[in-house]
Amino acid sequence: MKARYHAAAIALALGGCASTQTVLNGPVTQTFHAPQSVREVAFCLANKNNTAALEQEDGSRVVLIKNGYGGVSLAFSVYPEATGSRIDYRKKFGTVGGIWKQCVGLKSAS
Image (cartoon, rainbow, N blue to C red; front, side):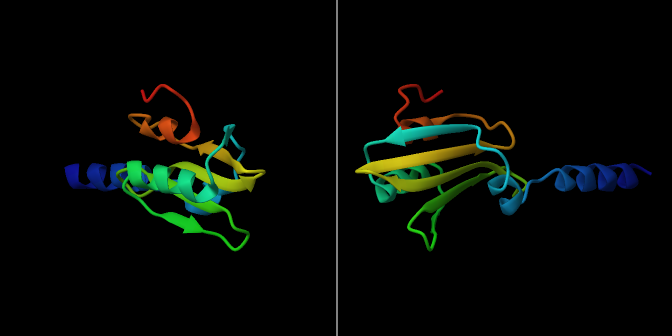
C-alpha cells in the first residue's frame, strides 16, 4: 500500500516538471540589459550554474537551470543588443540561491 502512495507521489512530482519549450514559450518574468556581450553573459550564467549555454541560429544563447527532477526552473534567453546584450529571464519554479544575478548586473547574489 505504501508503495502505491510513493509511486503516486513520484508521478505527481514528475508531472509538475516543466519542459524546456513550456518555459521558453511562457511569459518573460523580467528583462535585464548588460554591457557585456551575449557570449560573456551566457558563459557567466552557464559557468555559475554548472550547465551549458545553448547557441541559437539567430545568435542568441539560452541557459536553462533545472531542478533536481530535471524540470526547467529558470530560463535565460540572451540576445545581442547594441554593444551589449538583453537578457529575458523566465521563472517557472523558485530555486535556492541567486548567483545568476551577478551575471545580469544585479549586485545581490542572494
